[in-house]
Length: 284
Ligand code: PLP
Image (tube, rainbow, N blue to C red; front, side, top):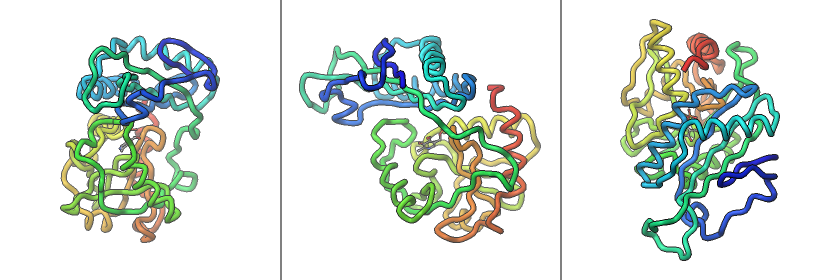
C-alpha cells in the first residue's frame, strides 16, 4: 500500500523512521483514525480539531493546516483505491540524538499516515446488525484519557482481556464504580427510554462519534439525552448498551460478562438512533 511519511508518498515497505524517534521510545505522540467511504470522510473537521488539541497539550509544534491534512487523506484514498477505508494519522514528537525524558527543543515531528480497509458502513436493521459481546472490568489506565495518545498499552491490555474471554471489547468503570468508556470506544446506555453517556472529563476520550450522536439527537429527535455519571450497577441493569467509535458507529452490545443485555438483541432505540446517524452523519 501507499503511505505518507514526512511530506512524501511511498510504498509501505520503503517507509523508515529512526529508532530514536520518541514515538517508538516513549509513545510520545498523537494519532487519529478517520473513516472514508468512497473518499467521503466522516467527521473530518472534528477529527483534525481533536488532533490539534492533543498536539497543543503535548506542546508538539506542527505547521500542518486542516487543508494539508485533507490533501493527505484524499491522496491516500486515491492511491489505495478502497471503498471503505480508515485513514490513520500519526504525529510523534520526532527523533532526538539521545533517549532523555524532557521534551527536546528543535526537533522536527515525525508525520505518518496510511489507509487500511474497514468494514462496510454499519446498518440499522436488527437482524443484520454487527453486535458486540463485551467484558467489563476496572479501568486501570492513566488520568489523561482525554488525550488521543499513541501510548495505548493500557487500552491494549484491557482490550486483550476481553479478547481472551471471547469478547470484542472491554467496558471500563473507575474506582468509584462509575462507567468511563471502553478500550477503544465510548459507551451509552438506555433505561426507560432515556439515553445516557458519561460526561467529558480526563477519564474518557472525547469521541467524535459520541459528539456526532449527541449533536444529531439534539437537532433531529426528541429523545431524552443525558450526559451524567453512570454507575456500574446501572450498566448491568440497562435496557440497551451501545459502544460507539468511528468504524462501529452505534454498536449494540448484547452481552456483558456473559450476561444478556435485555433479550440479547439490538434494541428499538438503537435501531432508531443508528438510522438517524446513517441519515445525518455526513452533515457535520
Ligand atoms: N475511546 C477510546 C479509548 C478510543 O480509542 C476511541 C476511538 O478509537 C473512542 C473512544 C471513540 O472515538 P471516535 O468516536 O472518535 O472514534
